[in-house]
Image (cartoon, rainbow, N blue to C red; front, side, top):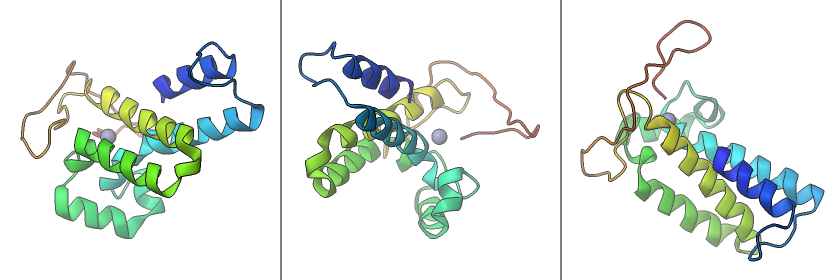
Length: 143
Ligand SMILES: [Zn+2]
């Protein structure tokens, strides 16, 4: 989400030549796309926000791949990119921002102790640090 917010802000100010300056509704739309993208990889966790929103899909993903499996991989990002570019071909910028949001989720999950299987189905865990996180309710969190 941080990366998407930076790109949106820079584009809104017209600083990038390949992106036209964004209107206020477009800035809002890109933030919404970035927020959706940033929670999307946790669809494999039924207790997550997106898991509670789409419980059937979440349980299917959890059952098929487990938490922090396929949904935390580059293959998942590529799938999301392909689906959004196909379904929303007239809104490619938002599809890209959604993928950047998902990518930022993966980046920040790499700072947690378990890491993520970036090259799934290879079982190599990628991590940048071993930070242990806890939720606001005091229970250990691994999303
Ligand atoms: Zn996650």
